Image (tube, rainbow, N blue to C red; front, side, top):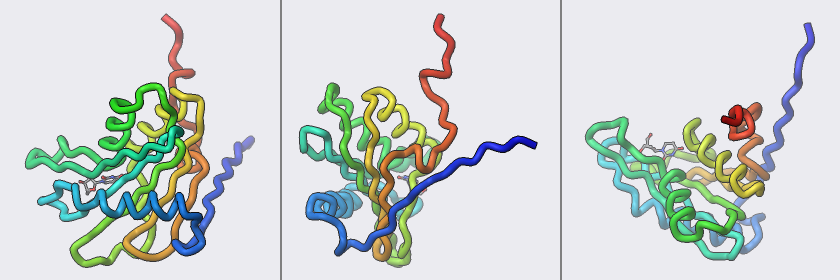
Length: 162
Ligand code: THU
């Protein structure tokens, strides 16, 4: 049977090895965790986005007693980016978490919905978005594009013109 091989590259770093801009963005994402409204999961996700004009915007997860209404940190941050800088592509996103038990010692990866939203943003501006992921401690993962963790993605190009 014919197969298609999908190759993904994730760079693994430590916080100390990051350059200063990436360190700052991850620190901003950690601060954004404090803006999380997460009384149900107590899982505070923070996201900081550096736009290509060097401005930084934030997002944190916003939960709801009606659970499906919850907004992920990445989606909130992307909405902020789009509203504040509608013509500017995104350079880098940093995503991290704070938990009550401080037990997240490996990177937390965006959920499927967030991967699709980030992919749309990349396609919209024809510009890959670097993504930096870290738990509360431990290794840092660096992706050069969301496509590294969303291969065979669906996008505008798949829709037939009407
Ligand atoms: N969450 C995010 O903010 N981003 C993700 O990519 C995964 C999950 C939030 C949603 C919810 O408030 C909490 O984490 C637990 O699922």
